[in-house]
Image: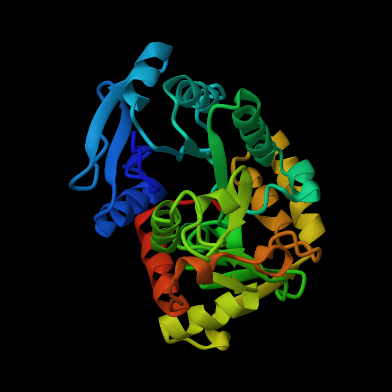
Length: 324
């Protein structure tokens, strides 16, 4: 564990995943961090070059504690459907190993928004995860709210409403509700920038340090856009006109309710409709750039080209098969 005022050793759960891979690569690119992937025994996950590996057995707590010994920070990224106790086991292990900082599995819209958390059951885990870290009192957390992944979500018809295969889009209400959304590379840069800050203030700069964000949420984004903004980007990226697309409108509240009903009938697309549509309600719950502000400028995050991100989403839609 580092005795300096900077984080050096970083462990990542999910370093081979969609988001974790970009975090690991960005951390390594700084030249300031050693990155260790925490993986299950027998995992064949492809990891970025330069990442060290510690294999663990989640059924043996001492295995997790040993893997985390000497780490300055633990980043947790895992799928929505991961085992319910996996996160708490990691948090307990981090506490037992004396890991000072934990970035829990947030990476989502604003889970400090009570209305959103109430209406989207999967988001109810995040406040509980943060509370456990605080209750154990051994590690401090910084939760990073990113909004939904742009290149992932735009590729799924049930998510942001775009069906690229059929050139169709469903606008929720009038398509004008703005949400904050992030690309995987931007979140990777955000994590690397955050964990490259000094732990305690240096000189007269009291803002650029981890102490400022101890046990709190921070907010980052690539874009804060409406569906209409996304559609304009799609038209540019595909070099098509509005006449080439079938555009329909649907009440956001009715779509949300319909998603719940579909879930109850066993339709897996209902889950996506319920979860995604809720952030497009006209209450700004999905617009954390407006309601909370972001730390993009503090971290020096670049302004991204939305059309390039849209092209990545379109390519992803061709490679993956989604329900409608």
